[in-house]
Image (tube, rainbow, N blue to C red; front, side, top):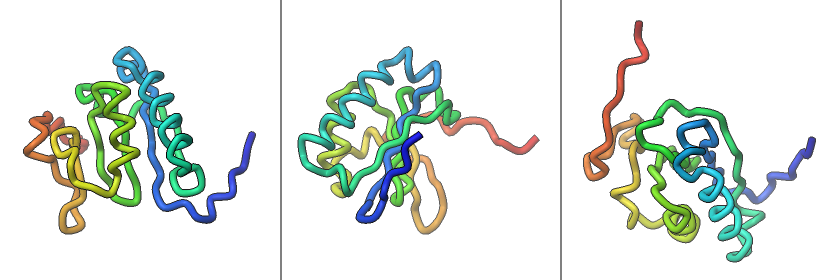
Length: 121
């Protein structure tokens, strides 16, 4: 196992590699995101992690950006590349599924995403 030096890291992208996301291009999105990070020389600033299911299968493929706490629905590798290029610019509004607003996680009305079911049982 590798232990990365994360000093200088400004953003962390969690890329869902659960079964639904993988069926909808998760591998291609993962590679596109990582390729764009390398192309732009952002390896020291942007860290990526492949995850298992994040529970938003209807929004597959999902990429989550921290520290912003923004959840993206990534329809193509190109959208993945755009996330890297524009992580700090609000131009991808229709791909943001959930985001922190005033300290609370809120669905983005511009994305027309499903609200989902309550985790309370």
